Length: 150
Image 1 (tube, rainbow, N blue to C red):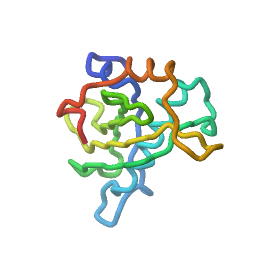
Image 2: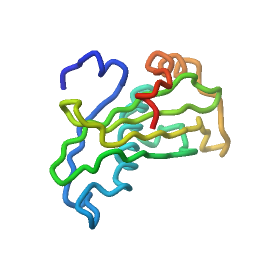
Image 3: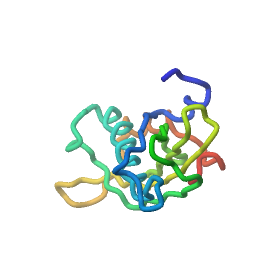
Image 4: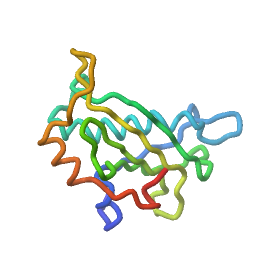
């Protein structure tokens, strides 16, 4: 996918195809399907930041998730999912925003938001975001403008 000026505000994006098993009885993308899409975007964005392709190296835990559904996506629809961290980055947590749009940018189907906490799974406690990770997150962070809100 070629980069446009709009892509630069969203540090990671990927394509999702709406398949038959994603549909609900009304014939459109089931609301719950967006959450695994957000999870995929979150992992694909975050793992390179921590320098590992292995999801067992994730050091974040989900604290909150929401999604605002704007337009029904039907079978065969192609969604471009995007993710970006939001300013300010907290000491132990951060907010990520998501957008699901058409490839031609004419339709936004849904917007999502998650709050993740840096987490030490061995000690079972939250931890501070490492300084080098914070630098990378701040580089990619967007202001919480109306277009980036769920």
